[in-house]
Image 1: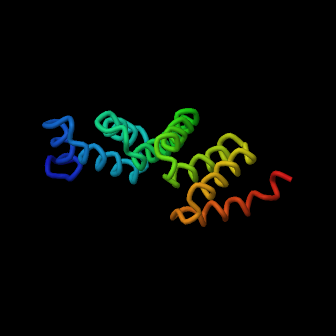
Image 2: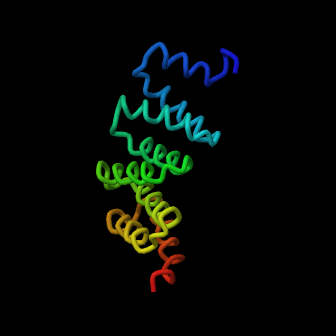
Length: 141
């Protein structure tokens, strides 16, 4: 990677100013998009060290933990987002998916999606939660 690449520039910014949250998030997002969970986790954690009140970053961190097969850390990250920001729908959606797919706990997954709909039925991911509730309905009977 040459010194003029966007990633090199972001790393240089972060090296000059360890509190450059925009650079840390941008690097986390870059590595997220590349599927490099280890590097994404590193930069998302750095961003959260600077400002722990970033529900999108913490949810993406959870997603990367899951991709890295760190299921407990992923679940913890999603639950922390919900505790800190109960209106952040993506965390409910992801927690439910993790409970369903990684923990084989359909009943709890459905409860999480239902909680999302109770909290904010108009959330941008509410329709996806409704679809998942419909898809998994027969699995709990």
